[in-house]
Length: 576
Image 1 (cartoon, rainbow, N blue to C red):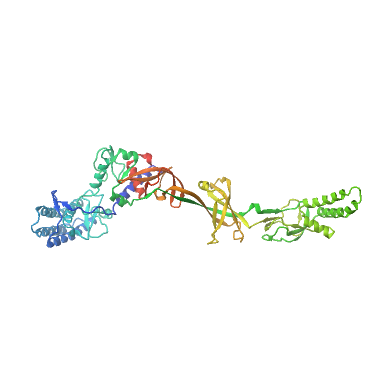
Image 2 (cartoon, one colour; image 1 turned 180 degrees about the vertical axis):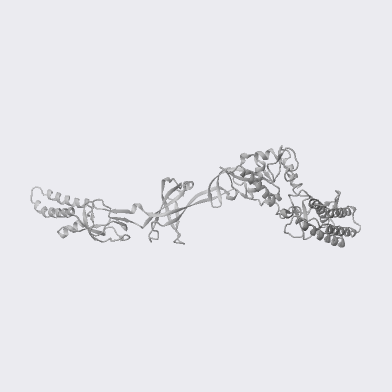
């Protein structure tokens, strides 16, 4: 990662944090407002003619605001003159009202005149900001004045930050065409937000704790030992306490939390079951494989199992075979049987029995079973082509002989596989192998058999890894009575591990910072502190918590990337 990336991320997130603050409503308006001289003007209903003239002045004010929003100041003299006339007309219709209210109208008239005389855009915006403040003072005297209108505030301007506009679609007169959507809908108080309220909140937060330095939210590389303004953007520097540096605690007021969109969730215990997914391949059950060979040379006669894929049953003939040795042994058996009666009249009758049993045993060792031997004896003559029987039930999957072929002892003639039970060999990631255990239930689905789920059990976990893929192989056994599962098919395997009640945290709450995992704890009173935790396996939308959190604690689940950016501005690097 490039060394500048963390700083760039912090700058981006901090900028996003400021822009995000342009989307919520703040507190309710106060019950009274100060006049330009600092006196308190009580709320009252203005006379209807005065209110109507003032509302006409507001329409002219909206025209001026639109010009400034598009960076135009050259033609403001006419609208400013009409604004002044409407305000003067309203002041003349007040009747017998307080001198403090008249002073406010006079101040609006004077500022409107200076707005019309402005020679540059910056001066016009400063005068417009003062007009906005005075009109908000009047709006708090009689709220009917701006009923149906919207009040916005800009955190970026160096002038008075609030303004009034008719449309709910934000159009900033202070930043102009470059940043028309910078702003937040706010209350109708004439006091400036952020620069006073939030700045005061920072000072109050720092009260009783030593201030480490002052920094700019937009330019975190700016660090000063004294309060003041940012040399880059002229925004007021914010104090950062030593406690914030050491702990990374971020303090956000309710309006800022709402603007960022912070949501929290409770750390709780809940039943956890982890699903591990793997891709597998259907293979033959190796315990149901059989190979057909003979232990004597010979020549193939008739083939009964004459093609691969043929179903065979145990004890059924596969083919017939002529072997001189086998033929000779049959003759020896018949000769021994014929001479046994004569030998019983001699002094050693058991010798005849021995010869018969020796011939029988030789045939058994050549895989000729007793029913076949009895059939030879019943016929009374040797069979030239003796049938070779299937040793198992299953299907012929390999066949290497044809009729008339010569065979040698030990030569593989057939391979037979039982398919009533099959194996699935699945590849599981190295990190997920601890979640697999013998006897664990496995759910198997195939893309070519939609809607069908097969259930099996993990019968074996191979004791090695594939070097290149870093995966471990597991074996799942499945019954296959209908033969839907065929070897070499691919299958999706899902293993379910029930871990019981575990402490969990939402996935959205966890931040990855290199080897560490962090969450933000909600400490109350707007304070958010980064907390390092250790997480276990993921279950759905939750991570299992191994350490670092207690049941019942609150963690941030939304807006935590922006909170992390602000925490970076204030905290020591060991948190990140």
